[in-house]
Length: 380
Image 1 (cartoon, rainbow, N blue to C red):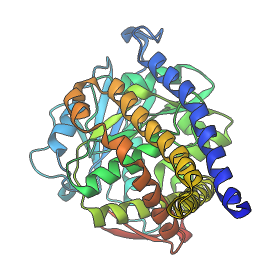
Image 2: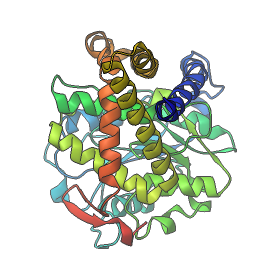
Image 3: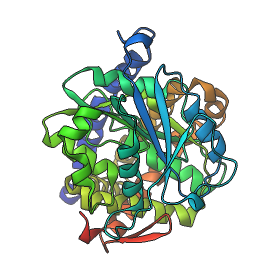
């Protein structure tokens, strides 16, 4: 019994600590979404440059770029950047956009960073905010406004949204959606541990003062580098709930496993403490599940009680994540009515998939990304 509690007690404590933060996060999101939550008006929102890199065809690419061109924002330009013209499929460019071709040739720097660097150099001089989007996300009209509002505070160095996968009815899409939502649950009223590159913004002056372009040289991850620079400057990263970006791209289960390993391999090299904490937590969670299940199958009601004490709070948090995302994305009410329950039911399985991805990312340093193979040990 000593060994049982040695395994289970830490998991229960981690569960309680996780629940303790959820009320504050929910209150923060509701406060940010409330009408009139910002003093900024259309007249004093800063001019912005929105940068989106494109690398071949993404599901819904034309519609995604059109959404970026149609943002509800008084003064912005849309820069669509690619390595070469061949990377931009025909018929996808909105009329309100400017194409930048990077022609990058640095083998040590990711193609995405080379593209972003070219777009920064090409951005119009009057833009005071740089915002970054991904081509596989479909932003809402208020996306850029939501990212710009936190930047009014001098203490905020960058703002970030996150993504919400609108899962298709296949195992890969469902488990990716539930798996990925866990990371989004780390974003709230506090200084965020990371910024997500598909929905983030930074003041131009802060970008220059933090020497982001210099830090990007020889790097693979744009967002982890930017987040580290912001924190090194003593500034915070603010979460902007209304900048949540839905993505309806489908994925197979094997492709999801490869994708999740790549995400966490990048994290291991660029945010090692975050990766280590995740690995330790999931080892504890999964060991406690096994310990409780083993005891329960031997006829002990204690095992069933401790297993329930681990699983039910996690499932409740999954349900809350879906409910908060629903508040951020009212346009997708029909999807949430149909599929939101998956974010509760699938959480126990996603916990094990997190452990699988964390363990697999502990080995090796190479990743495949958008047709390129990168060795992270030469870049981080």
